[in-house]
Amino acid sequence: MATTFAEAAEDTTVLSHAARIEHVSKSFRGPAGSQLVLDDISLDVAPGEFVTILGASGCGKSTLLNLVAGLDRPTTGSIETPGGRPALMFQEHALFPWLTAGRNIELALRLRGVPRAGRREEAERLLELVRLGGAHGKRVHELSGGMRQRVAMARALAQDSDLLLMDEPFAALDAITRDVLHDELTRIWRETNVSVLFVTHNVREAVRLAQRVVLLSSRPGRVAREWAVDIPQPRRIEDAAVADLSVEITERLRGEIRRHGQQ
Amino acid sequence: MASSEARAGVTKAGGSPAGPDDLAGVEAGLDALDAVEVRRTPLREVLLKKAVPPLVAVALVLAVWQLLVSARVTTEDKLPAPSAVWAGLSDMWLQGTLFDVIWTSVSRGLFGFLLALAIGTPLGLLVARVGFVRAAIGPILSGLQSLPSVAWVPPAVIWLGLNDSMMYAVILLGAVPSIANGLVSGVTQVPPLFLRAGRTLGATGLRGTWHIVMPAALPGYLGGLKQGWAFSWRSLMAAEIIASSPDLGLGLGQLLENGRNNIDMPGVFLAIVLILVVGIAVDLLVFSPLERRVLRSRGLLAGS
Image (cartoon, rainbow over all chains, first blue to last red; front, side, top):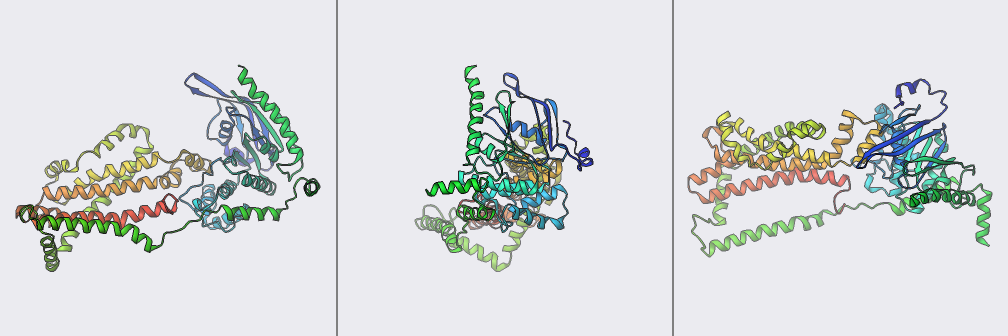
């Protein structure tokens, strides 16, 4: 894999991209021989850009995020993340239950190399950012689902990475909470200027959040089409413009899915 | 009418009628509605629910025991009266030997357990984390748990003689596999999500073991420690009963063996009761609170 963190430190001043995915393919050895999951994916995420990857099951969205996160290697092609190791948020909050909310964030800071003296203060600042000011001492099981995802967001931001990868982070939340977290994510994205690569199977969510929506086809995952979303932020998921584009994208998505029924 | 006005408001504000302060308000409301309330049961209720039933059970056992003695089911030298055992206990108390005897065994047991802890922990970690070691000795380690530790007494006596080191050897052979196995199963049950989350945060290698694997495996590890203590205590009693020698000092095992030699049935009963009480007490005073604390802090305890 072409990601080298040491190289990254040299040219942090001028970054042309937060992530560059070039001709990436990935196959897994399955019971029926080698199975191609991602086929020749090329995708750039500009600094500060918000990109959503959309697709039905089997499009390899999570595989792609794992590759960008450096948790797995592509079979062919290369991935660069010049800003260093990307932060990753999962569908499950993945907070460590043996630590309090604040300590979870402090662990991320510690692993990043922040000296002990500054950790507590920085953790408080990040909790304030996700509007959980008083939650430092709370145990994970004492928090609601939405609060857990916000702590998880704060922990991801504690990595101080240029790129935040999000793997369906709101899929398990109720609709009201999800809606509020969309607003929060948009606000935080604009405040921190972090680049976001957000994976989802929810078309409205993709349009609500992103500047660019990338549709993947399934089995194997290929880039089927891209849409630039120039609806001004802040948006609402109920907005007519969001709905219109969602209809268009859903049509295309259904077309992709239909192909599998015909084979 | 009202809805069209709201609609107009939406478009005018560039898509969102909710300002930043409003969002904060909604969020605070959601947090308040969804917050999980954690209630600790009051002490009185705990005592009533946890302490009373076992006390009733003990009282029942004593009552049945006394009934059998009163009904003369068998002779006094086979089934002594509870009062005879009590008399033996107060004798030992008055002579001042009671705590010496208990301490002789408990100190051996605890020291042996700590040794087993120091050996079993790195061993368990090695088996859990290194594939080759796991394949090589994993099955042997879990198989050793089913070997009664009393089987180790004869070879230990031959290797080391009748002394304290022999006792520690038997304790180690009994307890190390339990502790190591507890840790292995604890590590095996660590959710892969935690490992992935740890890796994205930069916790790999030894840092991953220290910050993620060990704390995540703690509940399983504590279970292993608990069982390790039970095995330590059992092994020690086996060793003390079989290998009694005047040089070794009087422990609970020897007390039992002396009772048999002197055909002193109240003494035998007293020794058995003391062995049982010490085993339960250590578990109740050390391991159970530790386990409860860990589980409660993770929200894994029912009723927390």
